[in-house]
Amino acid sequence: MQTAHINSPSSEHAEWLSELSFHKDELAIFKKQLTDVAGKNTAVEIMKLVEHFENQFLVRTENIDILHHDINEHLGKIAQGLQEKTNQLLRDEASHHRTLKEKYNTESKLFADLKAEFNKFLSKVL
Image (cartoon, rainbow, N blue to C red; front, side, top):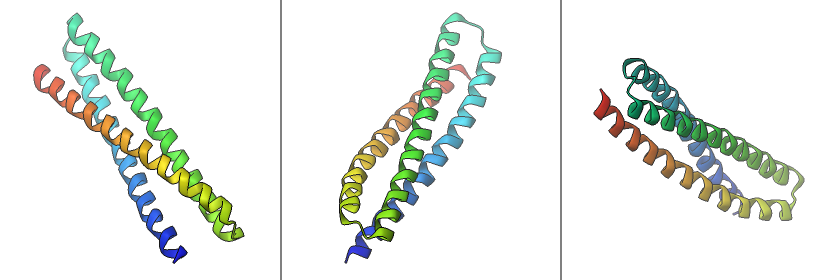
């Protein structure tokens, strides 16, 4: 029964890591689009929005990198707990898993909101 419990989070972790990588790839595309917009529009109002999005993209990228690292570290501790058969470590990581899931869900929502805001911006300036 314990194996089923551990296998389930592993597929969930893989899903998280995959989506975070996808978000990071999208951010690279957004940055290029923003550079194009900045090159074609020099109005102060547009440049303020360009700076806003540059900052938001930087924050999202940093948060994705941190979360990606935390998930990989968590997986390593689970593997260590399984190898050493340390039940306390596994219980601690089960609690940590819930925290990571909350962080992942928050990051996904923030990314979706930023993406919608950026697409609205692009539709106005292009």
